[in-house]
Image (cartoon, rainbow, N blue to C red; front, side):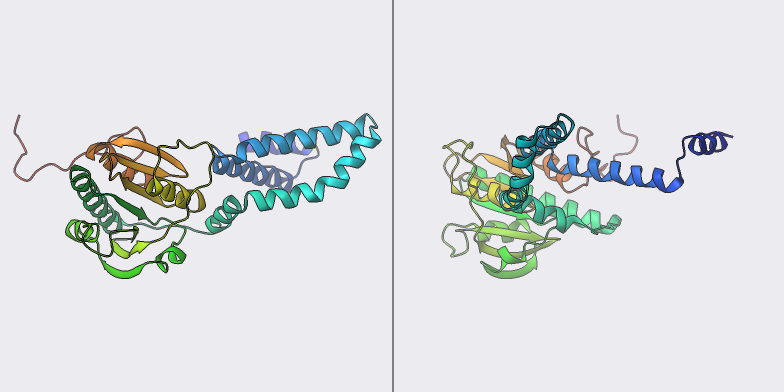
Length: 276
């Protein structure tokens, strides 16, 4: 009954189902673009581009020939400038196209174990005032950064992370990159951010973590050598002063293992059923 009414309305309005599909696809694309640029510098650029479009159509409607000529003349240069300025964001968007992740219970459990090892290592290193930066790969591959370091391809464990960041070892000066449940490489070089709005108190480790997460969808954990502060960096944004619990929570959310704002239930210890 409802579908018949919808069909009757579409027929009266000279609408076809292809028009409906067309509108839905455009709405979906616009929504995904807005979700992708939310919280980034691209938002300001999107607002500016929208204003230019409004100005262009205003010049057409009001017959403002000079304004219209200027906009038509400089529009190609503007498009080229947008591509140059936002090449990192465009690269990330293209990398996401067609990517579908199927993670079963076993894969999720392995990711949770990785989070536990990283959190334990980070809190230990923080208590020792030992600097560290750990980058966890998500959908966008980090192979180009892995190649700048020393390949390990070893199962990630707490002991391995502590050994790598021991100041007496040659691997401690640089980042480690985590792929799945393996430590892919150590002593890797990461790109420093050029964001002028960042605090000058941030050191090279924090700036490298921010730079990496600006160019990719990786999430990074940073331990400050000077203060022992633990930070997590995602999408170019940094959260500082985390403890073990808040770091674990942030990593679980970032890796899609828990929903933001909903605490992940802890497993019940064996033999604890029935206890008050």
